[in-house]
Length: 442
Image (tube, rainbow, N blue to C red; front, side, top):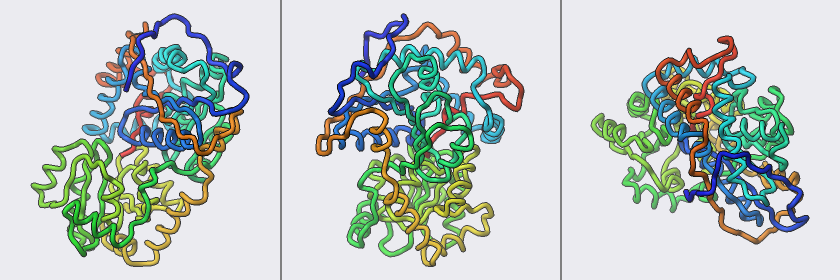
């Protein structure tokens, strides 16, 4: 991302809609986080749709807005916890699931991002959209204190809604489905709207010719049913076990995507899993070659599979949001959740060849076809009319210089990585943790 040199720790002017023109395309800022791929993927989909309707779009990485580069350190610590101590992450997630707000240390850390957030926003910004809960907390606080005087939106990237996705001060919450919308509404979220997914246009059902071409391109079997097993951009969870169990079930050949975890791909090949990939740039093409998706986190890849017409199954899900997303997808009738390994073969057979698979394909495609998309909800609150046909390119302008709260950032990171209980200043039933804010899409 490009960076700005003119950021200073002094008080920044508030961003106000007063100076905006009365008509024509407006400028919208999207704040995501480069943790995994899901939050950035949703931001990219939003940017494409807003740009196609004539809006100018700026994108920012929330990790760059945290003080003293603490965002990168916290991201690394979170990755290590999820990889090495998943049971601990599950306990932390459950303990924060009903927390009303971050604790004192985390409030200080996020407060350190407020002035930096204001400084990166152009004066003519007419709305800000967050695809990340930490960014929503900052935007909500700025809105409550009147420092941000343009509408702030949260786009809920998960199918289940942890309470800290819902930040007081946010003007509207956009959900991909009625299930997360209902969860957000029950937790007091303002102006909840079912906007639908924002996946790329190449995620679409494959023709027979596209399927044959995709299999040839990726070196996959010509005729066998293929189960695409995804483990997110970090390649975490019991992936080797799941791949072996899919193979042993004998219903479909496993095709595994390990994201940036190349070591995992190498291990799978040594295990005899022939079709194991690291990072794949052409996921639409790979989905075209496969018949069913097996996932463990319920994030953006599941939504992309729905658009591609693949039935989806949740299996051996990662802790925290992986399991709550699986439950929500199962409730919605969009993805079967297998809890007993003995059910893996029969469920895969049903999804590949039976009416259950047909019903899930239809439900997934309908999810993409029925919702109005996020642009109408955003445009309605900005006062700007979308200008169909104009497609300016998104502009990226994140921040560079450190803020003065370096101590808070370092202390937060150290407390999580070395002695997590010391970081929490409130009762155990309410203590929050930064691991909630770093939820991933795998």
